[in-house]
Length: 324
Ligand SMILES: [Zn+2]
Image (cartoon, rainbow, N blue to C red; front, top):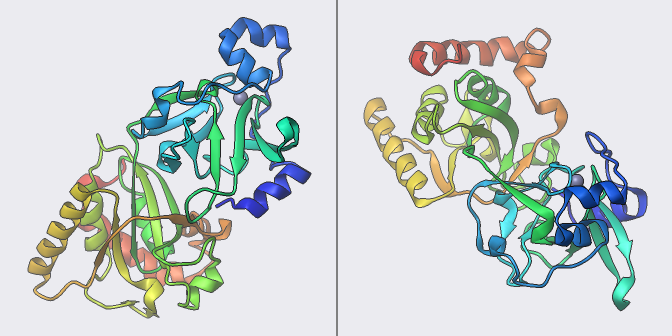
């Protein structure tokens, strides 16, 4: 997660390289954009506050650059700042936005630009909400909303190497990320989380297509492929970072999770300790923890001892949900 210290560093030394670069002359941009889009994005203009209904819209989806189509922000990071411009706490990825010191208009600010085509987007300020405390104040005219029917679910059931391997094999799952959630520390490291002092649980965050797999299916697999009856423990792994937890994003998800926990309790005939908590923020784990089983199954004996039996159990219990 980017914080103000990162923004100042990127403004001074340049942001991480974009995935691609788009370069056009001013005359070429002028033919592709409306006069207002051209004025704001190519001539560093500012639209009138409250000039767009985009400020009050929070439906799921992505916001891309109106000039080049590069993805810039996700609606999950959009918030109501009351300023009259669409506001976000984070870019969609660290290399999406470029930063430049802007001392114009008698102020010292940091300008934000599309990192792919250098379109002026707006500015970023260190007065946003926790935990990033950033406020990306963006001209609505520089953005194009792309509707999306992708949803996210975040939950923990012990070591994320294991849970990630299971969910990568389910149909309708678009992406699985290992990380940390439920604690108090911003951008925790694996070592910090393992100390048990950050309050975070090892979790995975799955992006899924609700038309192919439901939140209920995902939670059913989650409860069916780890032991939800052992407090702060999965097999030999012990500590609060291995607790069983489901994070919900709305009341409907909360109710589904509570019902399935009850159902699981009845089926097992003993108390289930899985916590059902509101989702707040997900911090991706370090790169070496992503796609762990697929990358390390032949090298790390933990994979054959802990993960292989778990995958066999999953394949036997949920044949209808298997990716073909
Ligand atoms: Zn762009």
